[in-house]
Length: 233
Image 1: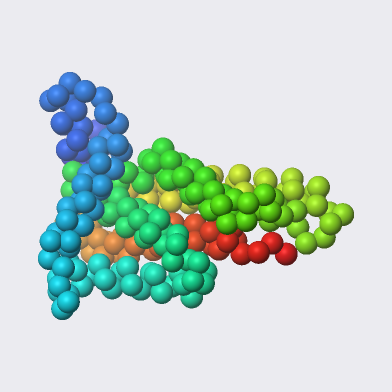
Image 2: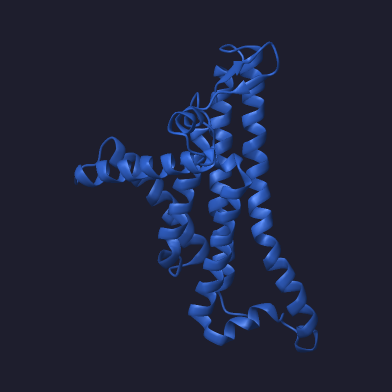
């Protein structure tokens, strides 16, 4: 993210999409603009890979195969063969969140995941999806996942489990928001104090941190889905 000093006051971010909003006279939220940008990047990469598929992968295809193949193996090891059925959603979440995170490192751009609304939408999708998978897989028997292993404690466990599951979207939202927003603020401060020397070395650390946050957002839904797919005890 770039920064520009205004009127001798504190530095403020200069975002390209805010300029676009001003030129067009519209008020599309900036996080929505950059979320659309992330989707466009992924679509373009997908079309490039599809148009250049080869038995001997190279370049972008090789990178995608390493990422997708490695994460698919990770899911199958932890969830089992049933994990292959939900893997397309998990890998989509990972690549989407990673792309949105990395956009924040582009000068003049802002990470959509630094906005709580983006993360809340993703977290609510995860909540609906893993419960849908549980109901689809177990039918009415899915309620047993909320009842606990001891029959006489079932009413209490039901209340606790519902509270626990409802807290998951909040946890997913705030974890990603807090980490990415904090990194964005640090990057702005470093850029304002030392535009090149203070910012450039931190890019490598932030790339790693943003990748880890995307992986966490991939791994937690995987754990939720693993619980939804397994048999109740």
